[in-house]
Length: 301
Image (tube, rainbow, N blue to C red):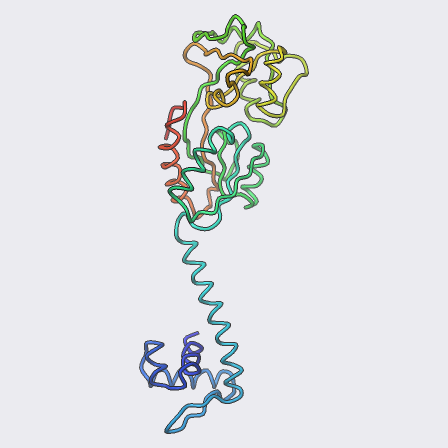
């Protein structure tokens, strides 16, 4: 490649001394490099006279190709340099649906303000799909409930949040802050559909106290779930970060808090154990903890 750069400099300047200055070498070394390229290609590229330098017809054609090759090489070097810098280029982030609406505004503001050169792409999918995407390389990083339950990954915990009980407005439990978990035995518990990790977490809470799911009524999203509660079909569990969004004034919903220790979940980042961006993702996690501290969560890690 040094030979090609030497010849391109000669082709641009038509002067060996000036070309040597451009390349940053001595004139004899430049002449040797051009001669070596001619020998490799088996063609004379330059006519050397005592007064001027001319390109042969072969030299003119090679010069055009040389410029394209060197431009492409420079682009490649720039791209590699950019890839080595943290928080630049694309980042495909997978987020579960029971986290995305409540933490993404905070995360997106952080990226916009602190990492403007990061091209963030967000993918909202269920846990199993996100883990498949991470393993295949389709996704770079996940934000989901921990533990992920997958091999070949590293986890960075961010926060823990309590589950709260959402009931219809006017329910006897509305507004209480000391609800025992055993109260779930006497309630019709509505849950998300299969595939949502929040469903599994809610089921674990129910199993602890011997409570059962209410019939066959299920929802595919938290907004639908709380509408079922508002309609009087039962009660449900929501993570604390979802309360402000899903139980706005006029929603005909009320909130009750469990007696300590309340059931909770842990949320964090998940990355491939083999990723070369571990340090970058660790720094992102630290910044995220600071930003998420404004939410009703307990920062961990």
